[in-house]
Length: 159
Image (cartoon, rainbow, N blue to C red; front, side):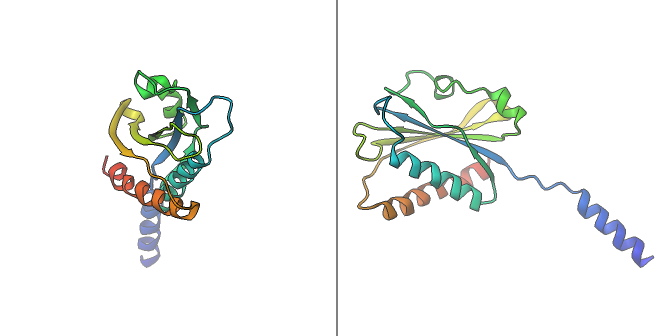
């Protein structure tokens, strides 16, 4: 009888599905020359998103960075050519787009806009814009970017 109870408890435990949300990141740069190499600041932002959300228990992926010569005039989802059905088929729950607006490629972005897109609803469910900052060194930049990104974790967790 004791073995049966343990077996039933183990079976119940194993059939409960634990689902970690899959979030994919999309870095969109604006204002940089189209022919230039990837911007170091943009790579730091991308790494901060991947590191922070992975550490928070999300399954993380990223799309290749996209660059526009100017800020898009239409909806960021449309401008990026985002395909919600493809993301849904891939099991993506959320897309977080960070639009980094530059005026000088040697500095960090002047402004950063965050858009959280919930794939199942086909809607942007959160938007935030912050002013960019210039950091003394890369270590300070990494620490500050992770701090900024950590503020987004509870927002996405509560959606």
